[in-house]
Amino acid sequence: MTREASEPGGIVVVGNGMAGARLVSEIRARDPHVPLTVFGAEAWQPYNRVLLSNVLAGATGPDQIGLVDPAWYGANRVDARLGVEVVRIDREARVVHGSDGSAVPYRTLVLATGSSSFVPPIPGTRDGLPAGAVAFRTLDDCSAIIDAADGARRAVVVGGGLLGIEAARGLVGRGLEVTVVHLAGHLMERQLDPGAGKVLARTLGRLGIRARVDVSVSALRVVLDAGAPRVTGVELAGCGGAEGADGAEFLGADLVVLACGVRPEVGLACAAGLEVDRGIVVDEELRSVSDPAVRAIGECSQYGDTVYGLVAPAWEQATVLADLLTGADARARFTGARQITRLKAASVDLVSMGETHHGDDDPDVEVIRFADASRGTYKKVTIREDRVIGAILLGETSTAGTLTQLYDRAAPLPADRLSLFFPGLGGAQPADSPVRMPDAATVCHCNNVTKGQIRACWEKGARTADEVAARTRATTGCGGCRDAVEGIVGWLGEQESVPAG
Ligand SMILES: Cc1cc2nc3c(=O)[nH]c(=O)nc-3n(C[C@H](O)[C@H](O)[C@H](O)COP(=O)(O)OP(=O)(O)OC[C@H]3O[C@@H](n4cnc5c(N)ncnc54)[C@H](O)[C@@H]3O)c2cc1C
Image 1 (cartoon, protein in one colour):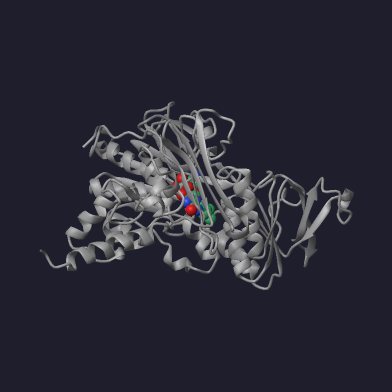
Image 2 (cartoon, protein in one colour):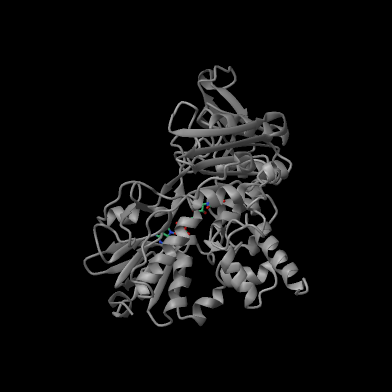
């Protein structure tokens, strides 16, 4: 056991979200004794934030997304302080102070405070959000959106990134007229190139979602309803319309969802004098560069130039840190993560990874593209030195597994490039098939689970995807690998039932 874990004061984790909760369970799995306290500002047991989009869409119940059974804490001697925010860190005394007046000493402090929604400082938001306007980050936000959608007719979603589109899809499924208003020139501009953005807008249009790009919201229009402010719509800047104040165009709405991006929650770290750039600056051991007793993981942390906004890197950091803090693997290091995004919106299949913005003008980069806008299909692979450095699959994602493996492992490409887009073409059998997939291939990216680990699970008796999930955690992140895990389990079952000889 390391010095950090064995000395009095133990480990204190601030933030019981996806990174913090995972860290706590990984530490306990390695060390049943180290004193462990976790503070969570949200009153709920930790939950899978990624699945809030499915809750909003009505595909998953809020009671189905819990990550930790509340009874687990007591049974595992974890001091869980749910609904208590840490309001101050005294680094000199090595004590954190909670909003309930408590003070807890630490040997090692882990900050896992995540992010909060960015709310643009425009008229209508400055004194807090009016009724009918909600940001989209927490379970409380999600419940507020669902409540407000009940009885509403028109919704405006401000922000056409991943979250905004998932929210829009959920709301249109609840019968609302939905318009997405986006500042950039095309939707999901961080993950998609303009061509893909246009095809996506068309696909959303077919589902009844109107997308307005290149426009900014200059104000939320508000009326007083029984003395309290209530939103009636948004004003768009620079659109030359005549309806709103100062000639701004007005979009009426009973519900406005703000999905304008997030900001790392670093206020506590800044106040404690830790080095913060966009996030809390950490090294390969997730250690604050200002204080060796403080670590940071998840969306509040910054490794190199990157603040990760996805769950896979947060969970990988949690595993590395648990190894380090318990001494299970003193050589564990976080050296960066690849970023793969999958949209979770019914009838919109979309996977994006790596560098997707290259055009044909870079002589060092090969770009292969296929577009069929009328069918909502757009596929692009960018290649450098015979390796996939990025890809977009929109509308038809059957080769996502193959591309992800090639991208993940920087493996050389097959000579037959067509098979990257069209499974089975050119005689190549898709590597997505459980038969062809190598054991080293990562199947669950959120939890970094390989086909080999699923096979090993099978060999130890797991016979269903749920049993595999219980042992490896595969499928328990965004859930996008569920079909692949079921495919592997099914294939292993067939292998077993084939008579020998
Ligand atoms: C709707 C939605 C859909 C998403 N979809 C995807 C997806 O498909 N794929 C993907 O990879 N990622 C997705 N994400 C992003 C993913 O949820 C985040 O990357 C992940 O939650 C980050 O984990 P975290 O622990 O760093 O932050 P969080 O999960 O935000 O947890 C931070 C926690 O710390 C608490 N906290 C903050 N300050 C304090 C304090 N001072 N004291 C005590 N507690 C504090 C907060 O209340 C919060 O509970 C999605 C996010 C949302 C909102």
